[in-house]
Length: 606
Image (cartoon, rainbow, N blue to C red; front, side, top):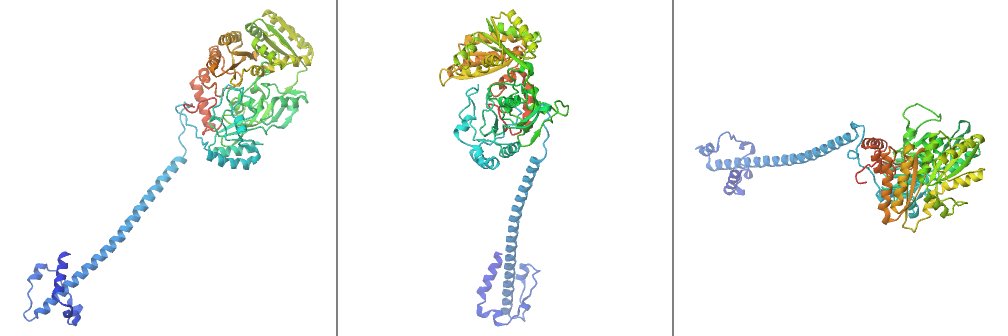
């Protein structure tokens, strides 16, 4: 290319514009054609024809050189144009390739996420294997969900007031003290199963943690909102939906109290036997699998629930059974939800069994020198096969607290005391009282009195129902806490564990009473302590729980596990059983939305 330019400049220097062959019309372009098959050396050696004008020859040579240079320039320009188009195409192709690769990668990722995953082959899930709870309690998420909740239940049924949120975080009688951060963002008050389902669908979509509440009388931190989120208060769902007196069953919503239910049933000469503490609601009673003072004769909550309607974590509505009193159809989901403490689903309806009120009832009260003597009497009554309706034990400290509280119409002997409840025909009740009185004397009974009418029976039994409140009334100041806990052991071990626990309480120096439904081996301690005494209170409770396990008993007969006894549950049942429970929890509630951190631990450090 450089040599061609030099030749062109030489031609320009030799031929002035006025002498151009083309300008003068001496040479037509068609004549200027040439053949360049020969090399430059051949061109240089070419001699002019002797008959030819030397000037014309040079002009012809220069013109052909000029034409060749022009063609080369045109070829160069075409190449540059083609190159620019090619580069643009290559860039476009590169971009298209990158976009296509990204699309393929995104598609592969989506297919990988949406394709069914292989199920974990293990039948249980250890804490190390457990998927961490997938929760979103950010304020922005909760504020956006607030709009959804208002559309579902009405703005007036969604509360975010500080007082409401704090009241739904815990209670002064709970053994678990909630942390400042453990407060729900909002309280939602549904009115039907369908509304609960819609609420849960919103929470499932947004991964909002949920705690459900009926009466709030539980004792082991059951409804503490450890992950924030919202609280679903079932308070508006307190209705009797259907009643079948001829079939002895009734359909109720979860927020009806057992006392209110029995007032309604009494009009039909019926009653519902489970009778835990005052204020308890059916939903919470199902959640903890509670019992009460009638448990010795009538059993626990488990024996009195026919079927449940439950809203699952994703909003699915499940009905566990129909109305027959017995069924062998499929898994017994009813019993699985009883005692699950709101961790597997939210109970919105229950079909309950009811029974006929006893024709005659009476109450007797017997005092003893020691708590061991009183417990020994219980073992004798059970061993004799006497079907009393209830047997309750209260120690001397508990009786003193009741007297000091002034909540009953009479003063009581401040000694270890047994309360008996009898029911049946008149003659049957008299016979039961006579046998129990004889057995009590064999256990060094000091005093034995029985009610002669219904009014006296109510008066005598009133002391038992005031146990918790009378101890709480002994608080020295606002810094005092109450710790109510329970265990259950085989009936033959009852006298020893009660006496050992009593000795431990005396040794601790704490104010604490003993009370229990001892007919089925279940008893409670109610402790008062302040922050400085917390370690001492923990030692008493741990002693009581560990002794129960050593006696092949259970860490809780009716209160449930909640948060406080989660670690003790492992001691009682072992890792494999807890891992099976964890597997069940993750199957029913993969995000761990429902009452997270209760019963089984789902995340290390939580």
